[in-house]
Length: 85
Image (spheres, rainbow, N blue to C red):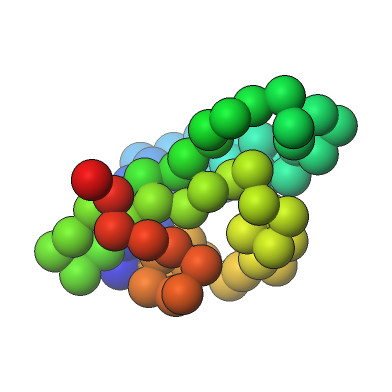
């Protein structure tokens, strides 16, 4: 389970509405496509499998996967993510 997934689960446990809002905001932010060329770097970073992994949100395929993923852990463990250095 990624750190983001863990944090969202903790937030939902403490405050279900806040957790749902945070999850929705993550999906909204990752779907920004109005000006993807404007930004050189937009990354979401989380710990997954004992390593820091990053999703490059300037990539359309990553944004599409974020919109449809059941949870963030799946994304950070996939080939869409890379080790964050």
